[in-house]
Image (tube, rainbow, N blue to C red; front, side, top):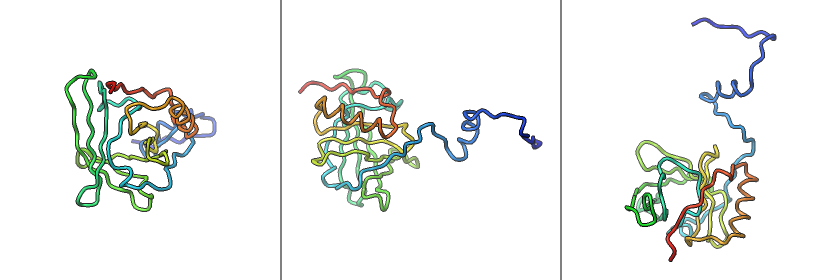
Length: 184
């Protein structure tokens, strides 16, 4: 393969250039940097969370009543147990268990979650209520976003305020889909 010189007379489309270098460095059209909360008390964060809304992901297709339970494992890592009912509120339960590893020097706000070895994903806690009543979790590339609550419903005013914060962080909140939960 020969080298093709680019002279000053050639114009390169910036989107093409972005596509071209994505494999090497990554590229994002959103310039706002995702920041995590300063500190997360893992003991307070542990327990059951209900998914209120999320960016659609293939691994969650058809999920209703989605929950996550976090607990401290004997090795100091966090055990993650995700459940949902497939295709309806009363559908067959889907369950997956994984581990989360705290990223050093992150105030426990950045985790690497692993459900299948050797793959790990970013789990950044980007907003958290003082009383740990709700949380927003995302990834630095803004491809993943979850809004979690200790209850299966969230006050609409709180939800709207959270959406405004997330939009300010550069997340495309129009991609969010609310999760359906059975009324209790």
